[in-house]
Length: 209
Image (cartoon, rainbow, N blue to C red; front, side):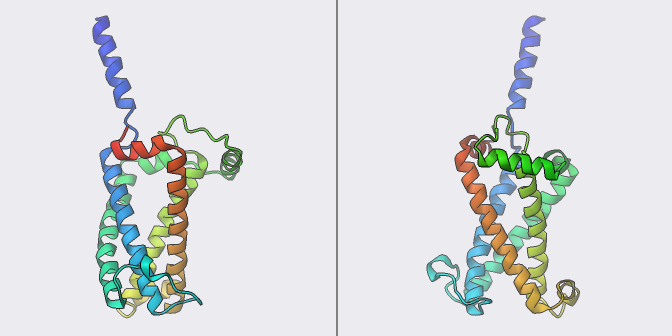
């Protein structure tokens, strides 16, 4: 009986080590690839009609010219939309978002920001997100929805005129799209830096444990 009990405990311990389930890892890396393709091709499209007084370096763009950038952008768009929608539906259906991202409180965020700045923020239990992570991940979901809606309004401004009206007008939708892209780029930089600072989190997103 004791050997059976030990076996059960060992099984439970092994299961508890699974930090990122397969569906999260697959969708995470698919989203990463799609976002990078969209950003690089988006920079190519931006360079054809800049909003500000600068252009992105050609070596960091994708597509070679406006038409090529558009083709890459639309291809990656469908990948991101389908995978992103599946991620949202699965995240809500499984309760992962509620468990991982809530609650988010100002006091909790301020506490964890101070802890992070003084290098006292713990990462012992990767199954629990700190308040900074919760805010970043919840925020990037909102940004992702906004960038898709603004992108669709720019793609089909006549057919999807109601989306254009949601942002006020077409030029405003372009600015919203640009600043959402900038927010995603900032998120990716922070995300990668944190993964490098806590290597076990990167390992968990690769092998799940």
